[in-house]
Length: 246
Ligand code: PEP
Image 1 (cartoon, helix red, strand yellow):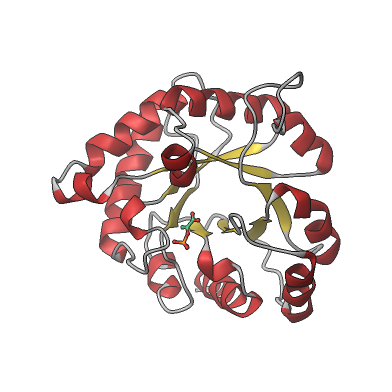
Image 2 (cartoon, rainbow, N blue to C red; image 1 turned 30 degrees about the vertical axis):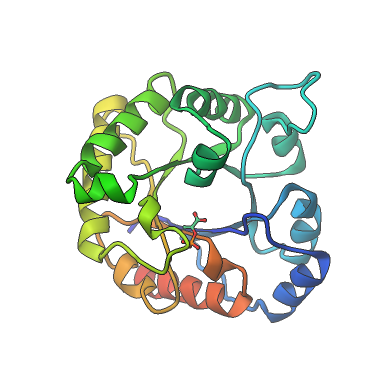
């Protein structure tokens, strides 16, 4: 079996005290094929790296620019300089609250790749598209536009928007079907020899993780709410690890 990935997205949550509490509880035997990373808000990257040396670092966003007069922006080069392994690109909350377009997302993806930071491209349909049976069409369009000029070194997170932070999770069958479709689409863009990891995101928790990791096309999880507490994040990591050992 290939690697599994577990990425925690802390969104706009965290504090030094929360990081110390998390690190104090964190005790997880690393599995050679399980890569765990946490994406805190930018100001906490350094504290997290010091407190959780077993986990890799991820950022939640990056600028399309390498440097310059762009107040408030953080470049992918700065993330690389800092030792960030991954960066989320095109999270639905950035698409929704910051009007990120597919074109901008493609530029961010290219900036991350050129800096040597692995982008995690987030795609997923809204509830209305799912109800209309248009989830394949929507996700395919997001992939085609983000990946038109991209290199193959990336991860993809399928995150149905209706499942993010709602407590609703895609069923394992729904997730697996979408991941299979995404895999075919990515193979047609990059060639079948590139095994792009495809993570599921959307209310993953300690209770549903086993069933999701057991899906043949699910290569890991992007976890929001349940990554904020060490106990629930460790339980999800344990599910991933058990799945790798089967
Ligand atoms: C996310 O932040 O990408 C996410 C999937 O959040 P949650 O797990 O809380 O649904």
